[in-house]
Image (cartoon, rainbow, N blue to C red; front, side, top):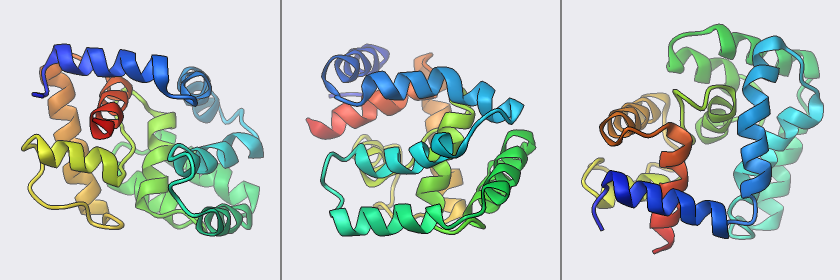
Length: 185
């Protein structure tokens, strides 16, 4: 199945209809960017982003591993998290954004990319093995998923996604949903 506008639209719609977390994800996409930009968010909002990253796999990430990573993030001081997110919404360069986020305990490049998605869903997208693999299988990326990706590897992935989204005339949130469903096929 080629990565065409029709395929992406169909798969993104399929995601909306079949993925159990869609409603809460969509709420996050609609509310978190403004909340992060205004600094009007609480601990539960940032904790939710970290939980979402692992829980979207619906049990594929071993429970002990998921809990350990969530607990590591939970050890951060809220003011440090607030400062990192303030920097994220004001920084232009995604590499700078990721550096600020990965300075937090429990945040690697994939988790940082989840924060970027929910802070700026028009310009950023989350990275994970599934999404990367779909793009590789469709000839958009050449290397297998680096676990975890470096900042420069995320930058390559992000630029690939931006170019593809522009070509397909879709936003990053739509592209993410389509990639997630394409992986399942």
